[in-house]
Image (cartoon, rainbow, N blue to C red; front, side, top):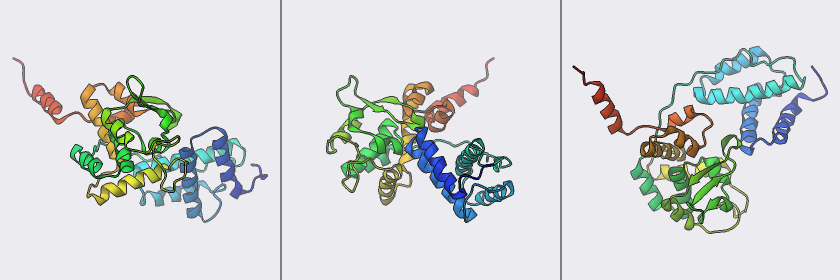
Length: 283
């Protein structure tokens, strides 16, 4: 173990390491939040936490957040300690005895078409465009926040949206439907972010700001779903239209088709027909 870095400086050095590796701003933001929560729990620097302490932390967190959230948090914290071991700041990873929680397989929860239609019809242009980008193009909140006018190809043939910095740093093309093009045309056109900030700055919004704007609006309308469920709606409807999960995987920007399966739900009529076929016994 080396002692040339004070324990309280290790997190800052780790975040600088992520920046040097060109990790996405959202990744660095999430890592900072996870480590800050652990520091608040520890009431001090986290570098020299023991395995026993980490097991106690894991136990307490199991009563506070969902298994999926715990898995993401543990993964983030573990990456910090693995980095610290490689940097010879500590001798071993204190999370080695922590178990990754098993999360139940999630089901698609698409927002209803009637709710999307009503929400867009009554929204001011910025909110309508945010909802449309999720429901009609499958963009994540972070992708909506970073979307630049230079990436909206109104004149492409066919018109396309270019996602240049999706999750994991991956890029993809998503066709721009006429309905979404109309929503985007209603926004003030300028260089820079498609969704303008409320303070008038030319900088991009944060993902949390995009989610907050749309979710507050939806809930004020009495719609319980969130912006992310508009993305569920995109995955479900595109899958029902083409029955090609690989195509939907590409449109949604998933690295794994397992992720795509969470968002895709066949139409009820398809399931009914399949069950009816299974009930027919051949002679």
